[in-house]
Image 1 (cartoon, rainbow, N blue to C red):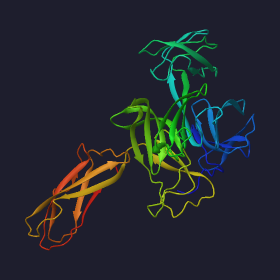
Image 2 (image 1 turned 60 degrees about the vertical axis):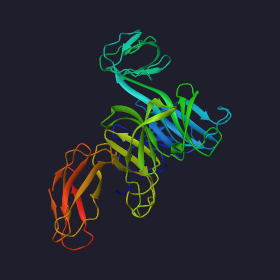
Image 3 (image 1 turned 30 degrees about the vertical axis):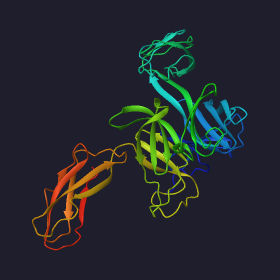
Image 4 (image 1 turned 45 degrees about the vertical axis):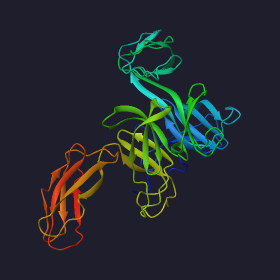
Amino acid sequence: MSENTKLKYSNFTIDQGYFYTFDHGLDALVQKTDDGNTAFTYPYDTLMSTEVTSSEFDGVYFWSLENSSPTSRVRRWLIDNYICKLQETITFNSSNYSGHNFDVDAFTVEHYHDTLVSGVAVSGTQITLNTYYDHATISGATLHLGPNSNGEAEDVVVSGTISGTQNVTISPTIYEYAVNDSVNYYTNLWLFNNYNGTSTSTGALYKINAHTGAYIKKYPGGAYKDVTACTFYKVNSFANHGTNDMLCYVKGTNTLFVNVGEEFESKLRYYGSMVMENILSDEVTVITVHDIAMDDQNVYRLQKGDDGSGSQGWTYYSYNLSSLDSFVTSISLGAYPAIIAANTVSTSSVVAIVKDQFLQPIVGRLVYFTEDDPVGSIIGSPQNSDADGEASVTYKSGTSAREVKITARVEQT
């Protein structure tokens, strides 16, 4: 893949097929198409002098991260009347958060998207959501209702919920809303800090109240250090978990998916991991992913080099693609026993294991086996992979004591 969006700075996010990047040189939020053409620019109402290292869109607001350690800064913006208007700034340093230093290159905002089950009249004080998020629709949370059929929208504050239901009590509405009108809201910021408190021996994932900036908790661990790209997205790629909102972050050549709503022994649970191809042709050097965004089943990785190329040699930042749809990424092959007599009688069971980019088994896929023994033979090829992604055949030995090469092949579709 060649350079496409050609962004000057290492941040981007996506909305409705357009790419958005904070450009502090232009003092504007720049909207681009996937071929690098500028579709529109939204000037800031507040000038920004520091480069943005990561950006997010939560369905209503754009968010930016500036990192000039020992201070990191997260800002929330709203496009209003063709201007990108600053709504909130949260500054992270040891003065504002005693006992904590900050060096943050990646962050995301925990956000949710829902619809109304029933209409709401003007001055309404109760809504019914389509989905119940017990860890999100809490008292004090702010919900963004709309737009309605007239293009009107507003923020309301949650004053209470009926436990286990989708019924939410809110501050009185200004406008009227209909069934299926949108409800968007954000709850927490998640910061990948290269400090764990004041120590740099390991990093930590920080949970911050996105409305007040209050420190909630940190999760220390090496997995959270030197992270440069993350996002928050609803993912359906893990068969055992269904569709869930997940914190997604890049570490090396993998994207990891975190369940922010569940802990085990004071640690966050992981849904799983996805292998990517952000590696140079030497199969050793990892290409840095500077930001990540997801749209539909597409994963856009902001890089300065093409997957599998000889160097990270792009002039500008552009995206490479991964997919949240399952596809074959690996076949492992084993022979049991691995050494048999060359007597045309002895046999070995040859087992291929087919897995996708999430290390999940590929089920019901034909696997074709071949060998290079002019006398020996494969018995039973092809075979369908089973529930564990395994397909097995039998190899019958030839007459020469030699190393036999057995190959397994599977079609992608």
